[in-house]
Image 1 (tube, one colour):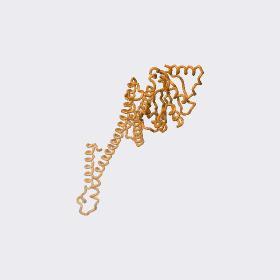
Image 2 (cartoon, helix red, strand yellow):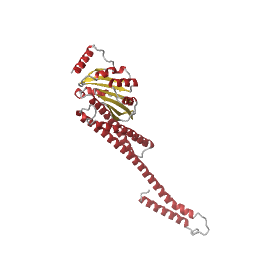
Image 3 (tube, one colour):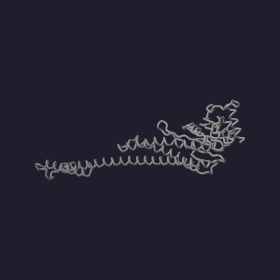
Image 4 (cartoon, one colour):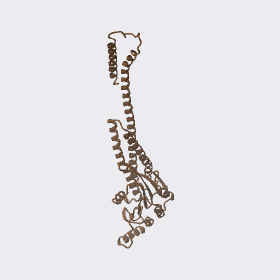
Amino acid sequence: MERTKDLNSTSSRAETGAVAPASSPSARPGVVAAAVYQQGQRIRDIRIEEAGEWRTHENAVVWIGLHEPDEMLLHQVQAEFNLHPLAIEDAAQPHQRPKLEIYGDAMFIVARTAHMKDGEIVFGETHLFVGRGYVVSVRHGASSSYLAVRQRCEATPAALAHGENYILYSILDFIVDNYMPVIEVVQEEVETLEDLMLREQLTKVDIERLYMLRRKLLRLRNAVVPLVDVCRRYEHIDLPGMDSTLQSLFRDVTDHVRRVQEDIDALREVLAFAFEASVMIGQTEQTAIARKLAAWAAILAVPTAIAGIYGMNFNDMPELKFQYGYFVVLGVIATLCVTLFALFRRAKWL
């Protein structure tokens, strides 16, 4: 109770001007937002230098958002929350695989983000430090801002009162939800390629686009699948500071991630089938052309063979002196050619 009273009194002094207001987060490069919350209510914005002191207050949680911070800022955050050096080293170096690591009573989570930009899938990365009384998010690359997450949490104080684990759930849920628009855009492109394949043969450009879509879906799958294991671990209460009442929320995130994984796998299979179908259609058309060429070659072989035989210029060849021999030969050639044409037409070679 003394800690709570001290927190309230400090907040009152800040509002009356007795305490200097915290500087704006945007005043320092790399810091997007830094605030302290108590019982789900936002108390005030704070400086990084104050974070370690505020997290010790009862029922208080410090939420800091960073975007591509430098090493000096990361080490300052490390000193405030006593973060593990290996976690700080990972946070300073992007391109980490999604994972969940536990260091004492603190957790370090890596998640990959994805969104559409100019019709292409752009990947980013988010590192999360979660411990008693604090959450620090570190964004790298082209990832969406978590301002919407902060606003949504602040709009539901009863839920935000659950503390750092609810904030973690909200961020992971936001990351997973942002996968869906990407899936929808890719699905539209896949359906377009399918329709095009059914109407006409795919061109080289279409096949290249199909291959690029498969490669991007593979990258997206590599970002999503490890997150399934991360979220599954949160369904259990053996993690530091885990509130059993939040298990259902993390179970819901796990279900969403699995659905995204299933959608990705389904789209990759459709693209594989589309490519195979395009190859089969091409082979079928080539076979049809080869049959036509073979049929016409067989038809043309008849007059060629007969003309070749009678063009050998031997003196004792039969029918050379026959008055109507030329017309008989033409009639035989025409009869044989028409007969072969009818047979090939019946066999659907022509």
